[in-house]
Length: 408
Image: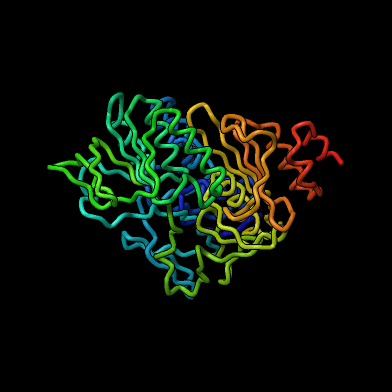
């Protein structure tokens, strides 16, 4: 292949980084321009709330590639530059530094932005969000043994931050407005088990409690809750979810709804414009519904798939969704896609340290969650990939080997 075309990727994320690599691996020899709002080259976010925050591993391990890789591959990095406007009629992306970058094909991989609280005292020093590697460094340096940490939000980020701070020896309080942790993703019954996990490890978990104000003289010193309680703290970490980073695309003509609307080939409604990763709301041809997945494996694989689509090598992107969460000595794994309202079937006794449960909708297996059940989760993933029919009784019975069911 020989071309003078410019393929532009906005978002130096996992999705954007893997897409840039794939373009070269698939033989594209035109210009590849990778634009990122952060000053750092593409890196993985899952370690931020775990190894990086705990100081347990070298930061070098989080980056997708060493710095010299991008020069060697002829991938032009534009870091510390934020896209502010898309003009599809001129095929241009405007950056906050005033530059306009022309594209022949464009991939948007801008990911998601943290949801920010709007309460008094939110700007006090010592109040943190966790989205970037700079955020993780700041929280790591601010926390330690006997430090009083308050985490607002018991979703995955909040739960992982709480676990990491407890591992470091901090005193941790978690405030969650919902009745159980992780309710929106895992439902009430699994959420109750995760509440036990954190409380058993010394976390002061307060449910049905919101925040009214951060207080302090010069830096955060206490939090006033929605119930009128005052909680002393040295550090506060806000983890109340994220939202797709699409604000800069308003008025561009791009179809937006809970992210960027794309088909199973990562294509948008605009010619030669694609999207992948956390920002993409894509049609899953097997599940028969739209998904927007905020997890590492999807970002990586959809970035690769989108790059191939840009090159005219389209294949329908229809994986069995998968993610994991490390908290304490436990690894939670989740396959498929369900809602918190789906029927839950436990395999054996619901022990939070060796949990395996399944989500069914209209009698069909939609998802499964396992804690320290690696082999079983791999088997369930095969069942779902092959669409093997299973019954409630087979799923609930510990004596039935899921791996053999998958071989049928």
